[in-house]
Length: 144
Image (cartoon, rainbow, N blue to C red; front, side):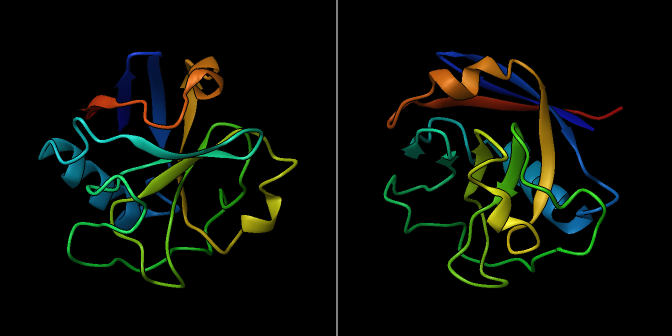
């Protein structure tokens, strides 16, 4: 499966880590298909670290009303540039908020603490263009 994350700054094409984080991928796909992310913002942007979105309140405090378990034992649990990972407020508290890494240099301490569930393979420059408040216009899921 793949996804298109469409923003005004461009489109990021994502490959999912279905083998390593099946529950996290399934949750993100379900929310995307429901239109949950459409119109939400990247509420947290820290240069050379991450861009974070998926909060319905735009504050970093909101979620879908449930939590999912962390999946930290797979092969692709490394926070490299372009990796999508679940944000959380502690182990097993993720829901809808996710972040995309700017660089490995400042995100490697997140390895096996946050679930990596995909990676941008095209449009990686969009990560650098996103600013706080930029909108996720739509996420389109492509099932292969």
